[in-house]
Image (cartoon, rainbow, N blue to C red; front, side, top):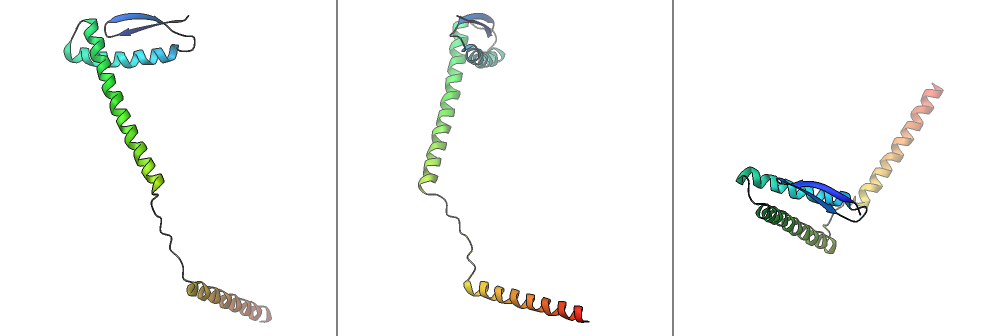
Length: 121
């Protein structure tokens, strides 16, 4: 069984874990140590148990805030899925389309006549 060495606050630890879980344990220890270091910077040296308790509580507080944000985002996503925002697409009236087609046909006819005049010219 692999062992992972890490430091939290001012104490070194060694924990065994399942094969393949080393990185997860190291990442968790790094997070806990980050919180512990913040506490030590603000409060100075303190007993190991108190430091671990406070660091764990700070992480739990962050986790709770993230869970609340995730739940809020999920509610918003479900709301948008149930009532998608309406997109208004402009519709060109049929009369304008017909008029533009007619103008295009006239322009082509004029271009054809101008071409004939230039060739005969």
